[in-house]
Image 1 (tube, rainbow over the protein chains, first blue to last red):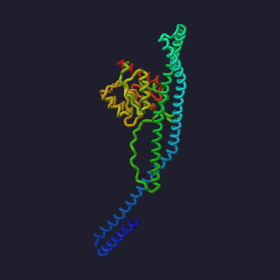
Image 2 (tube, each protein chain N blue to C red; image 1 turned 90 degrees about the vertical axis):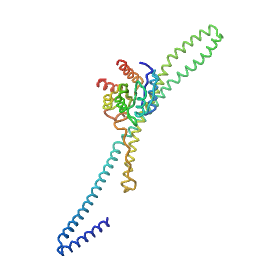
Image 3 (cartoon, helix red, strand yellow; image 1 turned 120 degrees about the vertical axis):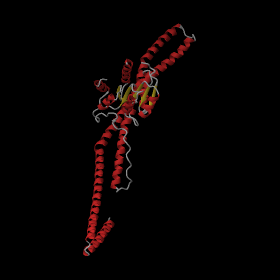
Image 4 (cartoon, rainbow over the protein chains, first blue to last red; image 1 turned 180 degrees about the horizontal axis):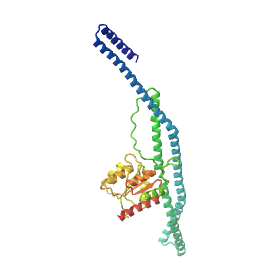
Length: 247
Length: 129
């Protein structure tokens, strides 16, 4: 910069001297041309300064935007992400409890059917080998009937419990979507912090690469109670909304 | 309804695809295929004759709403019944899906009963045509 100024200074001096020489010799055309050149030199350096100022201003604005983005993230999005992650814990806990309850309800019924079935099988084999007297057979027939009753009572319940376990696994999709959203927030925060370090470290790091395009435009993911607005509260509201649209 | 109809299940989460597949099997529909996003699903739909599409909305690559629009824009597929099963529950999204020509919309988490009812409703309309 100091070099630039001194080069410029020398150019001024050289032209001024030359101009003075031409003026003294009454060479008006040439002295006018040199005056124009001097003015142009002055304008050029002015524009250079103006250009530099504009660039500084632009950088300052960008930095300000970055600062306010980080402040905004700290103020709104980090607490929002914290609430979303808490909701993930609630959902996984509910799913685990729902699964465990279904299993706890099913296991005793399974064990009872298993034991009864095994005992009946042994006696049934005796019957088919004609090793059973009439009295024992009457008892066996009665027990078979009781077993069939227990089976037709308990099996639908087991079926229902298994279906409940199946449905409870939906948490993986829903929490996965919420966690993905938080991950993308963390990534953005990381990018901004790196940028901040880059700026305050006087461009120690190479410039940021282009951010990857956002493919999740227009999607919101699962609604988190208390955080998301403008959502329906369940299937009934969806059905109402659709029927109001002629569905 | 013919229990042998061909159903395509599209969701980026394999756990959700398995849930839907098992529910459908429970209802007697065994002829199902799976895809993990719209980009994979569309060629499958175009190259084979499916009778029903069940799709999620929020997926990488091609989203469910775009898959729905692509199906409606394809002369060979335009009449295919499409059911959305999604966690997207903003009112404007449900309206958007309705305008794009969805036949049923189920919000997650859903119940086996809801899936059964919505399927029956779709089949009733298909058979009435």
